[in-house]
Amino acid sequence: MRRLSLIVNPRAARGRTIRALPGVQVELARRGLPHRCAMTRSLEHAGALARSAAAGGEVAVAFGGDGLVGAVAAAVSQSDGVLGVLPGGRGNDFARTLGIPLDPRKACDVLATGTIAPLDLGRAGARTFIGIASCGFDSDANRIANQARHVPGSLVYVYGALRALIGWKPARFTVTLDDEAPRTVAGYSVAAANSRAYGSGMFLAPDASLDDGRLDVVIIRDVTKLRFLRLLPTVFSGRHVRLRNVEILRAREVTVSAERPVTMYADGDPLGELPLTLTVTRAAFRTIVPR
Image 1 (cartoon, rainbow, N blue to C red):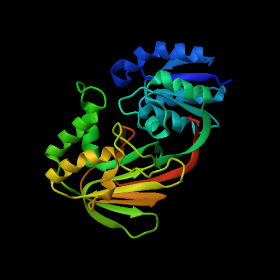
Image 2: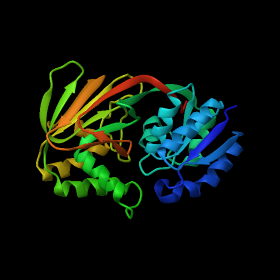
Image 3: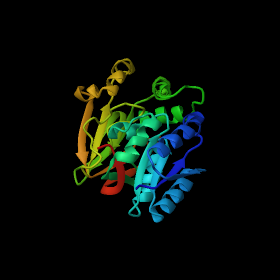
């Protein structure tokens, strides 16, 4: 029988996670899953809790957003521990990609009946990410979304994109894939995708896989703001990949630099300042996925 250690972000989704916790505990008890809870103070604290859970033979269950899931995944990758996921953030794109129900009470069934699968982990130096690392226009949109305190739920990502577009100026990026020659592009963003989605259901890299040992590199070249605004909704269906200003490549390693200071974000949080070299470690950690 699986024993669980729930690592809970009490501030996730403006406190909705902590309010949902009693119902989750009822569901876990109904399924006969012994568990204990610990509240996180920071992502670093979450990693320490996950390592402790793994050492004790417990599944480290991240109950929060993708930032918390990424911190716990990084921690269990350093051991033979296992990650469990209860969606509790505003985006929940890791759970969405794996097919885990976004209602945390329904996701308890995956913890009880799911199978354990090895998944890849993206890396930028000492930092790691589970989803999509992106920069440029995405950096501005992510920063604005993180600062928004009065926009409900997943609408915050649409709000961030619209606000970012107002002041956006095209950037010039230099991108190097594996051993290829560098290429310079002017446009909106460059992303390295370990997973398919970000921003609460934006399928930026619809063909990306969490277990293929590669990053899908998405380059969005320059178009007018009006055209970009019209095309923005297509990201939710993945149809943007058909557009002439969108290029998708694959690599095990990608280096990105820019002509001006740019911060790269991943899993909703700053990953580092450009230039950055991104890689992927295949089968870096284990997690419970739906059967």
